[in-house]
Image (cartoon, rainbow, N blue to C red; front, side, top):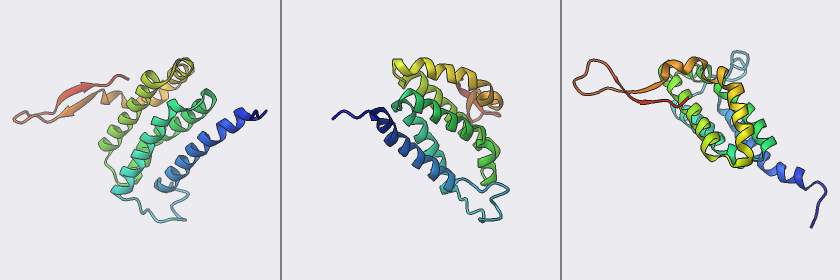
Length: 164
């Protein structure tokens, strides 16, 4: 049956799913300075891991959205990634772990946009990426390599270079 608001109805369910993810992320996020008086900091290592997996889940949903919803979702993801070191350091996660996780989010987002976006999404997605890249990647430039401590080596050795 034809509905004149079909496009709006088609956008409602996907955005509802994204909104549920955003709400859950907000609930699990460590309290900010102004929210800390209302709630105690009950952030644990397990909830930090869960929060990181939810961020990755939201990123993986990007390519399944229509272009307008994709761009709206990308703006939310940008805000989450830009707040990431602060989010994680407030939860007791060390700075290097926080930066490593942020790099993982950035690489997952780049991969999602570059490899999984369809032809209709690719141009607006890449336009969004390059307009937001300076703020997203600014402090992760030091993390261009993944390091592994080799047995018998004095310092960790680079294993993989980031594509960002």
